[in-house]
Length: 177
Length: 268
Image 1 (spheres, each protein chain N blue to C red):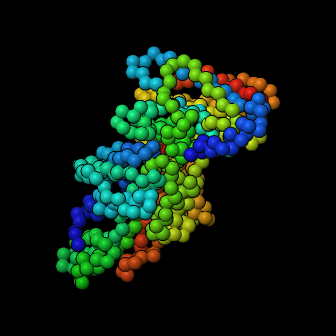
Image 2: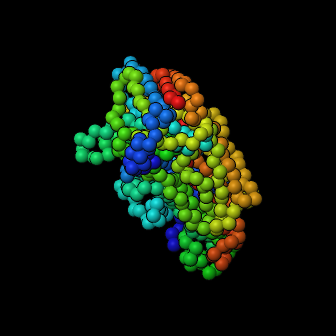
Image 3: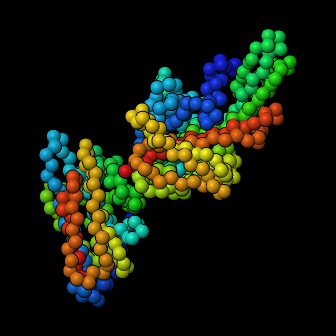
């Protein structure tokens, strides 16, 4: 719900403002390769959190979106609550699936996501302190949260990183002024 | 109506005034407290010393009341009466917070039989208890009891719970299913809708059988009936409080015993 924006203002802003001036960010999420007997790809949520821990916007949610039992929401919605922190902070207010936000679970490796402020999943952010939060939860596995604080709007191109220990690898935030 | 054995009567007393003796704990244990969407929650109901280990007696479900987020009443399913616990399922279909409660309200009496001099006991409702006592009974004592044992389950986004305004009850600021380790939660205890001041509250983590000390948090409500808990660890917790007053609705009763117990889940 929060991340759905009408397209009209976007079209207008695309017409009247040069895209080069819109700040953006990229998130690189590494899902580690794990040597376990029963492996399931983790559910992952990435979101931007304000200083008061409220969700400014959900950037991505990866879960089991297969619809083999004709469930239009996807098979895995039952377990979305296991992304506990995201769920509690605002995930439960999102009606999944959401175009450009929800997607299938990803294999081990590095996954790059790019966002421009005010378009797609990334909302317009008021200047201030924020956190990028990435949470992963795996069936018959563990759960991990990695957060990276940042200031918005970015003044210089910076690449703060954070690293998970078990369920997440390196999380890289690329700030594009 | 029913004449109970000594043991059952003692249990009834223990139930309604848990702090008065080394009483057993009455609890409900939901299989989950947070659901993404419509689902089924399975609930254990038992009375035992160890939390939440069903090793003593089942909790009677006569006073079971399940309230959906929209205020409607929900019937339990697949109810089973086992030797050590009672079990039931609840289909949680609506978005919001469900209240699952066992309410024990009633009265119990004890008297000396005139002919034999033996002590007799009876338990019943506030309305009928007087009829159970023979006219020639001596040393009659009637005590009213009002107890609530409950737990909460949320589907999707939590909804506000409507206070009942009856007996001892817990009012949560925020949702009772939104508790997390290291965070502070504030609660208010009410008696008949009014703040319960200076009341002792204990909060005990489950799995008591796996530690040497009970490590219960002993708290007290302030002038506004409020108290707060900073959750030391994740897990299922049992919160309980009890008190007594003289606001009885049974004319012959001198005392009303009030008790409250809630099972709350704290997430890591």
